[in-house]
Image (tube, rainbow, N blue to C red; front, top):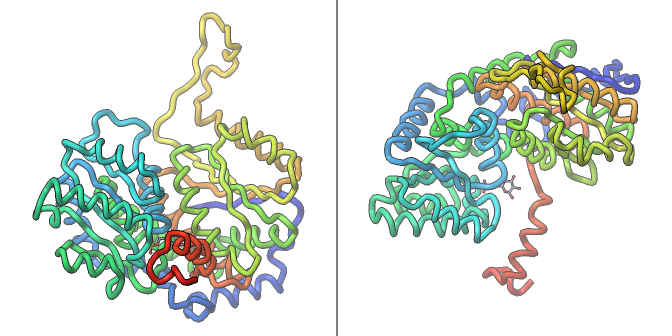
Length: 428
Ligand SMILES: O=P(O)(O)OC[C@H]1O[C@H](O)[C@H](O)[C@@H](O)[C@@H]1O
């Protein structure tokens, strides 16, 4: 479903030694015995989803659509990027007076953003979905403090029927608050980390509320789960992607530039950056994930990619077919000189731009991986996200890294808490 192509220096990615290493990783992964294996709940999640779970999500999404015009999703990192990635990929670029909108908060700390958000929703019916696996993350907690007060001021007791909480089943400040206030709750499973949680209620409730087809999304994820679970190197695109990028990493290509010509995929890129950055960037190892949108960034970062420091590999996320397109036409006065393009659609232009850019960067010394996605719809996005998650597990295990923890994110948090004199941190 997702096809991988590679061009660059000749590689020996699939030598017998490397294949046997990949096979061991594969076996450990499916026997759930590698490092961090108690966080492998996402591996068979799509095929294990129950009817009851899906029905409950869809019913709640319908209830939200009935009671509100706006759903504000409060969360950060893995607690918002999956839903944001899917919704941005599927929604139209412009929508006149949308009947229902999903907005996000708590993904940064901006007073202006929160103030303007509360002004923007005034006069419109509102629901909140606050999402935090730990239930203690500061940024969403700050946003929720404001928005909870807003809801209570506006709706009084009815506010609790409009607030939906997605958090750990057993612990955390958010869970306690949800219980106390009687908010409807959804669970982030113990064995699924935030960045792997898009197919749990974390991603699915906002996606369903936004009006997208969960069955199709999960059908895509399930297809990926099935196809990518076999150790068949010739056909397993996830193993191919992981093995090629690892090989390039070993040759000194330590930054991966994920490039797309489809602006709707820019949050898939953001989601991918968290997935790979937090999964692999440990013990002074890992490929640094960065992203560009073409052709926009060809006019800014293109120079560096063509000609800067040679530690970049580039992976192109290419959409093969688009639903909507327009064609260039013959103009009477060919003042812009573009008549030679008459009959070329803008998607055709992008496919040519892909070839031209890829070849130019290749000759500039940037090895290329192509990830070919047939189209952007629920089914293919479901497939793509699962593909990236499973490939990430292989990739981190090739580095001998636990893909499922993020010990490094504590350091800056502790510093912030010390500076803010959070109780318990003053003495440090
Ligand atoms: O869902 P939460 O517990 O609020 O976590 C939200 C995010 O913040 C943390 O700092 C982690 O680095 C991320 O992996 C996580 O996705």
